[in-house]
Length: 115
Image (cartoon, rainbow, N blue to C red; front, side, top):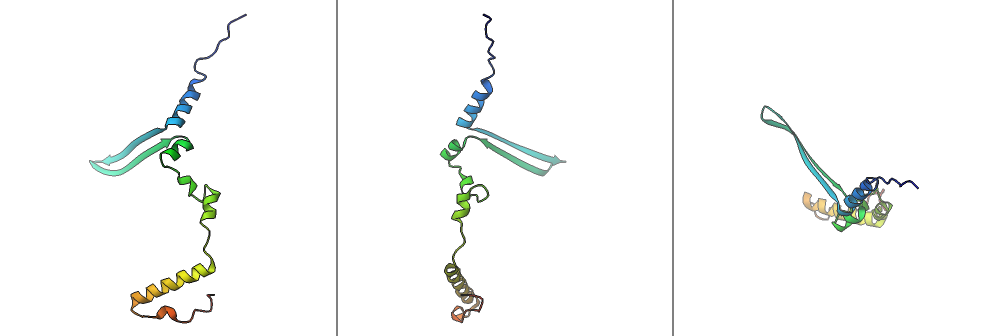
């Protein structure tokens, strides 16, 4: 029976990827463009590659609050109700009238467009 040939590098890439995602990998670099000793442009590159679990361990979880990436984030940022909007608008009107020096300007009748 001929010996089976097992490539030694077949698991190498998987092991490296597993280690990178488990431990994390940081790549940092700067690109500077100078002309006659005058710095025209600086680009700072910071790249972190890790698993989601590792990112959460180190305090990176921005994707949870980004409404483009998470449906729960968009639901959490629902619009305020009409009563909340009216209360906020009244408070803003009082603050504006106090800044303008017109006391009690926010206590006038509400415009017809509001509830």
